[in-house]
Length: 195
Image 1: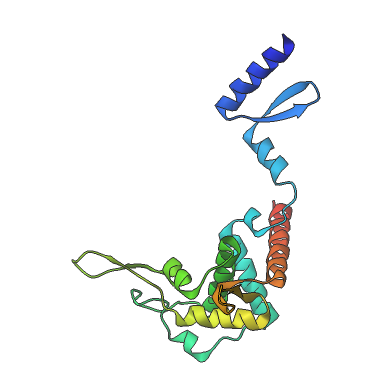
Image 2: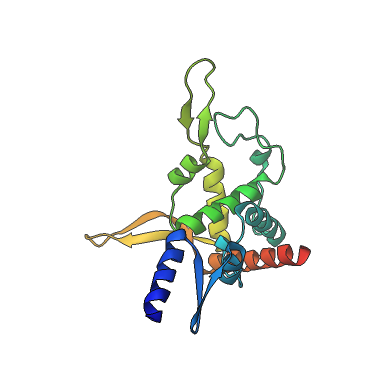
């Protein structure tokens, strides 16, 4: 009879969406904070850190590594046709490259067109309806090229049925994933130590 009561209690708690911890013969209901702290005891990946914080930390890493060159045209270029002005920060290209790396980490494989769609937005056409526009491709291609030279990003190649290789977008290399995870762990440590 005890087993049946226990099973009914577990079913009730699960229906409510409670997180459970089974400790020998006892069932302990966890609060949400306790449940999250058990899950995130050790931060190991980029997915454990908020995106904005990680992107700014990785942009600083790219800037300090000095493997990434800022071209002259970056001061005058707009990031999309629907923007009125270019970016105000001089280091905006580092942030864009870090954001591209973040997107590659989350999506595993993506091409320039997918990134243009991601960074695109609505074009204000006055009194007419808005239309979606893709972002400029040059800065995305340049960031990918520089990241490939640094060894963070590589091409995703597939073998076709005829025997030829087909390039299907870009993806992170093992070195790139390790760098990003290392910076995520360091960023989480700073955040935890600062509280």
